[in-house]
Image 1 (tube, rainbow, N blue to C red):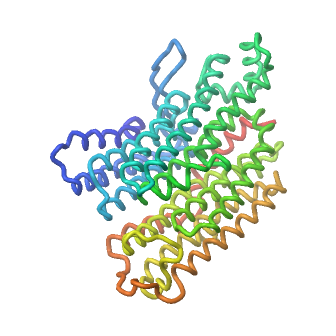
Image 2 (image 1 turned 60 degrees about the vertical axis):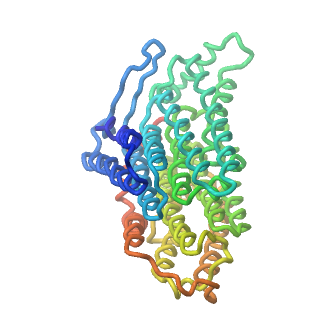
Image 3 (image 1 turned 45 degrees about the vertical axis):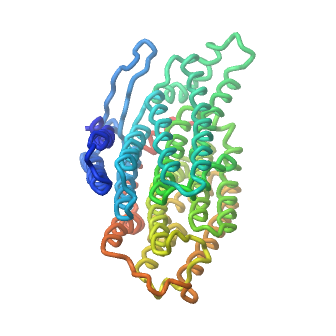
Length: 508
């Protein structure tokens, strides 16, 4: 079932490529319906649950046995959560694109190709398939921004591609050093060696003729891998590609970028980097904590300075993902405090998942504003919409309050768990980062005041409220915001066992 799940979107893209006589509308409708297949398969895996070893499904093939390279894919509770996010957001994006008339065979096929690569990233347990899928997301993302984006899309797409490709090359160099020194790039084997302290010793032996000691060499390897992840998350100051890419991409593609591609970096940091480099991460943790605090604060302050709604939410994404990085830095400082560490890391996973859903809802609201206004999306272009389109304002406002972390909505539980764990491990970083919550409230409440309240803006008096199709598109996203907020255990039950296993690799 796992191989079918990963390859199903790619098969759909191949069918679209072979369907020469398909019109744009038919191609978009086919892609939207085809994207339901991964949702069904992910749901079946969730209902089936995990075996005693923690895996829901696994598939492996010895690809290059002489080099110890295998195509290994495994689904456990944590990766299942990211598979669910990927399949849901992809279907949502295709449905929005179809509803807004943004369809063609190539456009829909590229989205399906990207979905397969994302599913591969979240299930790969060996660096080679992980890296291949990681880098292959760049091609459809670049083309989707470049071909269907705004007037400055070529420059934004080029910048996105070059910066993220550079990060990927750094990560490749780091793992090649591990392959040369240790003889494997299997995540499980590397994590096991690291937990026993063997990784540093083996590297030191393999590179005994160099001037670098084992710990120093491992530090350089870890920094190279961390750079690749930092670009994708993104962590300040490696976020420069993000605002232009988010602003110039068509809004459905912006949803893919913020809802899924940024989660690759968070997933890699928590599931790959933490278990393999626990000793080195202890050295890097204070620096990473400082960068996380800067990401939280500068992301919020940059959002305050923006007038473009998409740029406001772009910097808001930087701010919110900074909490995930803060949690990762705090976990390394746990010193045996498993309760705080478990809270922080579970909160980081939930924050990543919930942000993907919440950001999708908010950007969908902006897509509707753009379509109604003929492309306008300035903070001062609207006003008084609450009286004219109350359903749109109510649903979009619910997503904004979830982003604010309002109790009872999904955004609250992730942030609460992150701070609950971080205050006991890195109190200074948690205390400063609380200011990020305040700044977030300021720029999001300003958005509500400027767009939804005040006198009705010019040319808005004839706007229709949400159509039936738009309400049906909003409904599942709002449900995914409300239900986990009221019943967080619906998601936490998939994380608990995996979180404990991950912490076992980090024991002092």
